[in-house]
Amino acid sequence: MSSIPLLSEYKVGKVLGEGTYAKVKEAFHIHTGEPFACKIFNKKLMAGREHMVLNEINILKTVSQGHPNLIGLVDYFESANNLYVIMEIAKGGELFYRICNKGHYYEHDAAQIVRTICDAVAYLHDKGIVHRDLKPENLLFRTEDEDSDLLIADFGLARCLESDSYPLLTTMCGTPGFMSPELLERRGYSKPVDMWAIGVITYFLLSGYTPFDRNTTVEEIQAIINADYAFEPAEYWTHVSETAKNFVRGCLKLRPEERLTAREALAHPWLANVPLKGSQQNLVAANSANNLLPNIRENSRSATDKLRKAVRTMQAASHFAKLSGQDPTALPQVPMPVDEPMPSGL
Image (cartoon, rainbow, N blue to C red; front, side, top):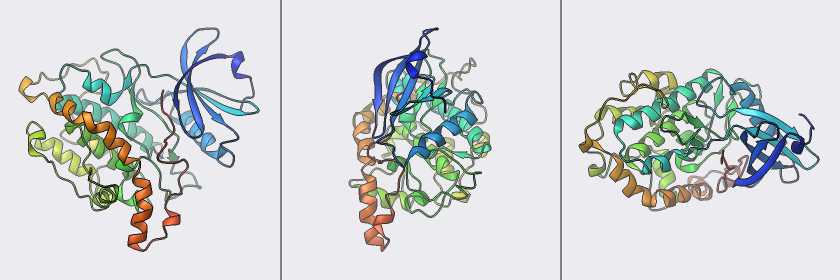
């Protein structure tokens, strides 16, 4: 890793996000003025976990410039106290908030977003990489333009399955509301965990709430483990097609081997003829009566609270382990505290 001083190449600006081990700051190249995102890892706080940063860098090096919908690595540096990772910056904001600011939003818009995500995930899976933390907060727009590319960000939890170190993953990590049953139960998992997360994201994009939301986090865990969900309340699903629901069912299969793969998802009737997000190809005109935005906005009033509640599921997982006779001390072996995920802020 280069030890060239950061300040000789970049001018660091305001904080964009902050997590347990790192801050994300805006950075500008001194000679060109081009803006970037700089993730700064404190070596002292990261002691014993340096492999996490190196893993993220190696994965970003593998996928950078390989797909237009994956955040790109620009550079990385090391100083006596910090590790610096320079990435492209996404100025267009988070997916869900962008949707809520639109004048209208149709099922076909959701399909276009999901197809774009699946296309990028298919590229990752073809490279033997599992993301492990797909969620709305990690789906960002490159610019504020209407036809901006959608980007998958934050590869801090991603792993390369073809590495000898990761023949089969067992670590519980990610954001609990988007975790698959096998991940929560530490049964060993692979690429299908990303497809489960895509199923949750799709459900969320069509309704504004997550499929496994319950009154308590313990109940939520149990619902996830049993794949216990429904397309209810019915009034929120009136204008959603059966084809879209079938796609969600294909992603939220309890048995990982029965889930759609990313390539199969792209061939699914709901997505097969839909252009990627950012494509210049126009979407099919939609009937205004099928505008999903009113329901999305209504449910979004509590969506943030629901997602915050979801990150408390990890603590509930320990309690659930006691009830099921497992060793609860084995459950929270995560690369970073799940109730304070690493900022994507990119």
